[in-house]
Image (cartoon, rainbow, N blue to C red; front, side):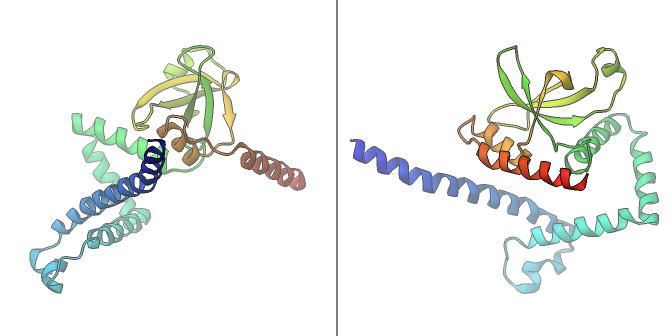
Length: 218
C-alpha cells in the first residue's frame, strides 16, 4: 500500500502543478481573446486567415496597451486622459470605483515607496503570532495622524491561500520587522500556507553583498 501511495503522490506532484498552470494560461488566453470583439468582423484573424488562432487576442491586447501607454505618456494624450478623468470624477459611483482601482494599480505597478515592494513581519492577529504583510504606502492622512504612531506604515495583510483578499492595518516602524524577502517569494509562501519557504541562506548572501556594495560607495 505504501508503494502505491508513494507513486500516486509522485504522479500528482508532476501533473497537478502542470494542470493548474495550463488551466490558468488557457483562462488568460481566452480572456484576452475577447479583445478581438473590438475589431470589425471582416478584419478579425479567423476571417482573414480562415482559421481560428488561439492567443491572437493576447498579442492584440499587448499592442493596444502599449499604444494606449504611448498616447497617455505624451503631452496631448496626457491632457486627454486628464479630461476623461475629470469627466469620470463627476459621476458619483463611477468616481469612487475608478479612483480606488487607479490608486491600487499605481501602488502595485508604480515605483518607489508607495508600492508593494517591501515585505514586513508583523505580530498579527495578536502578540506572539507572526505573519507577512506588504507595505502599501507611508503617506500620513487624517487617519494616520490620529493614531499617534511614529513613522506610520500602511500595510496590507493578505489571507491564505487567496492573497487578493486581506486586511488593511496601520503600524509603527518600531513594531514591525522589514524583511529582505521579495514580493514573489512572500506570495509563494502565503499561497502555499507556509509549505514553500524561501531559502534563508540566499537572502543572507544577498544582504551581505548589498552591505558591501553600500560600504564601497561610501
